[in-house]
Length: 70
Image (cartoon, rainbow, N blue to C red; front, side, top):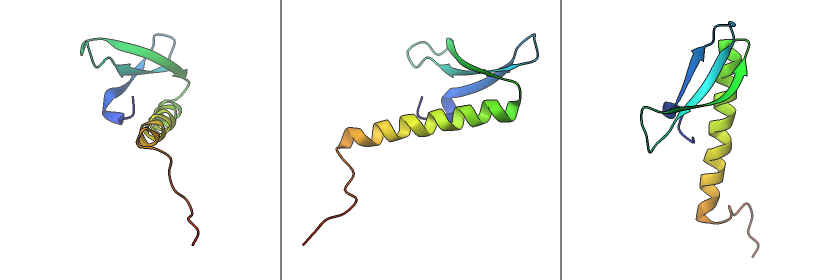
């Protein structure tokens, strides 16, 4: 979920757009996440989710040092 390449946007019969991510274990399986009125809104939702999970992955390496003192 931390890579945009694992996502897609599909249009639903009601005209809304649904974001989905690909199941990494079963490549032909997609999981729906959000529904938005516009493609732009759907892509913004994907971008924010990718950013969120990328930050979580970064913290697996330990805390980020932002300042040290001498």
